[in-house]
Image (cartoon, rainbow, N blue to C red; front, side):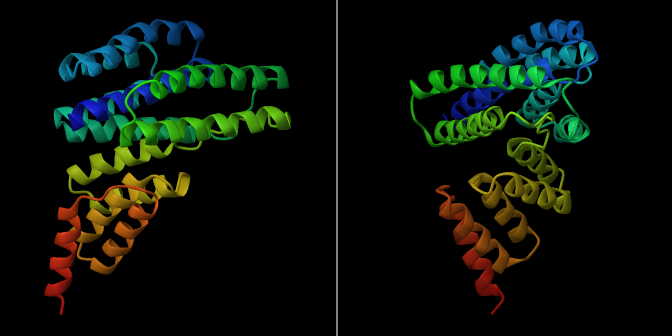
Length: 255
């Protein structure tokens, strides 16, 4: 059941974000349009938890458009589910790098900038309506919170009407996924960096605080692990009781 809920939450992010890729700096519109067919196929296969076929579909999308950041993200998440952790690191690192490369790029004119933001809001509104009518799990509510925050920021940009650049900072959910891939390959310092990057992007992402606590526990920093758990619970994340028990047990051993 948890796997199903996590997959549904991921669907919201994928569908809400593909419009970004359509409108931003791909080599050509024809490349992105061609890549959308296998990308959507992959999303459907993810919903069915057909991970191997989903990975094949996302790889085809990337072959058609090597700048398709959300296809790399989806491939990375799929590889995490397949337990292909090195491949997940590679795909998610590429997704992160594409976001960083786009930072500070300018629209050609103000009309283009405003049209991009309005298109994004319309796409996000569709996903918000879809998920607001479904079961309100913790994962769904967190997805809705991030979507509403994205919408608010876009609306503010429209109202200001002066910003000609795109906000291409790395989304928190990309950093969280990459951190998890690094953790699975026992690259703990890299995992810590990515979880901290997620928190810097959005301090309310409880999963990042929780996962950071696991890194601290694994690397023997018990006091920091306790603080990270408190930070996760402060933003409403339900921390696994076993994690708290493990931290308490490790703390006793230090005395």
